[in-house]
Length: 331
Image 1 (cartoon, rainbow, N blue to C red):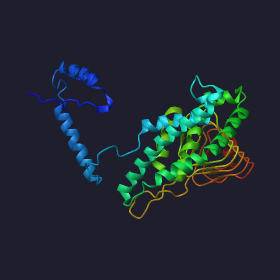
Image 2: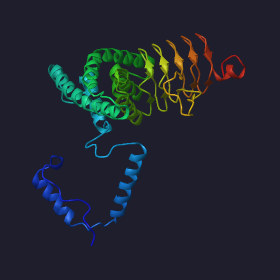
Image 3: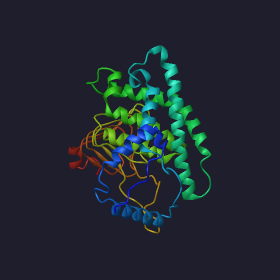
Image 4: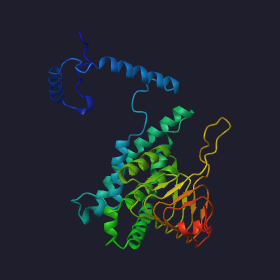
């Protein structure tokens, strides 16, 4: 006889009432036992997990979630975004007279949730590296909260750059509500601050949520100045060690990537070395351009569409397909 796949549900599980659990139990009783022949599948998945944990030196029986939650962080970023822009990205029924109360309540809830996720990251780091890093969660969240006004100031500057840089934009409100490039930069400003404060895994998850939503991939380690505008945006990639100055504008499918990946003595890729471009102030990079390596694009330069740049570009230069073919540009 087939054995049941799970023990009877217990009252209080997942916060469900006894009546709700009873409904679930009745529904389960009407199913054919092991209808899909899952018992061997579950056993094999169990064995695979054990094998993986042993090979990665993971302890069994930790007793609870070990890593930050992507779902929880999505909600936290949405709440933070609403608190930063309450009348445009906050709840639909919010009134001006209730803004401060809404922001206070939303930030308190969001920051408590953020603390939980950062604590999980630091506990994971403690298990991997030894020591106890979890006490740092309080400090990270306090310092992050103190930076929220400056994040809002930077984002206002980014909004203005998007409005001024796109003749199709009718208002700063339109770019905030509609433009994927602006939404990606909001997430980046939040993620970058957390990355700098010592929560790189939480920051990376936030960045990848924005990547999934907008098609724009910005590593949270990238340093980006004020007045940054990504127009259209799909396919943009900005690497971890990229440095971008003020008032820079880029278009879709631009890559600021690495050209080489230095290896350690054991053959493993070296981590954290500067390997992405430096883009100085007032640069424009058009669609499809690829900039690779630790090169410098000088102030006020223009990089044309679909060019491949692997050497420094002087300030004020205009690099296009045509002048590359003549030998006047850069490879």
